[in-house]
Image 1 (cartoon, rainbow, N blue to C red):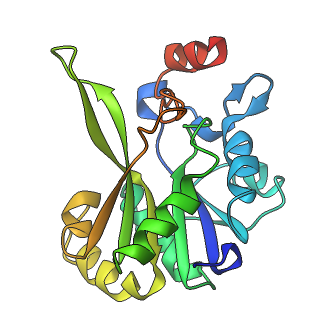
Image 2 (spheres, one colour):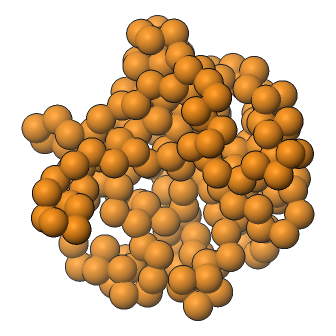
Image 3 (tube, rainbow, N blue to C red):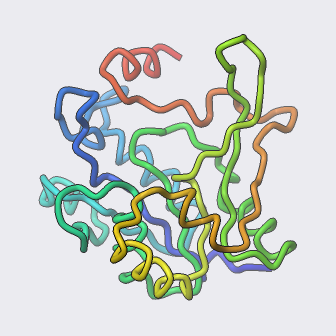
Length: 207
């Protein structure tokens, strides 16, 4: 079994927040507390240590009391740049990634990803959650920013991003990836609801 202490949690807070009018999403308040802080408290329960990937307001993130690292790639290269930063800074065999704008992610997220990774002897475990498609059908959709990665993948990701690769699923497709469904009875159907806009943030507060 993978020991919790062997997993570093990474909060991805490096985006532009363009759909939220350019504000720093992780620092937007949800029920009186920054979203990234909700995320941190949830992730700290599931991993040995946590680091944050942010590209602005670094002092605000540092005030949460964990290490903060900006992207190693220039100009907001997306979540994969955060993965790269995390893998470079990670001092444990595994890295668990979560975004800063999904404060209700499951409390057993990391444990279930770790169990599947080990069972399948995979390199990457990726969460999937039920979502309604445009016809109102419920289907499982992968959540590529919720991953558990082996640290040995660093070299592959350096290579992929140096060649201009930016899409998470294009990179994870190069490795043995196990998809972990979060659709058991008792799983919160809103666990992976994220706040991309201020309206979605208010909706999250109400729920």
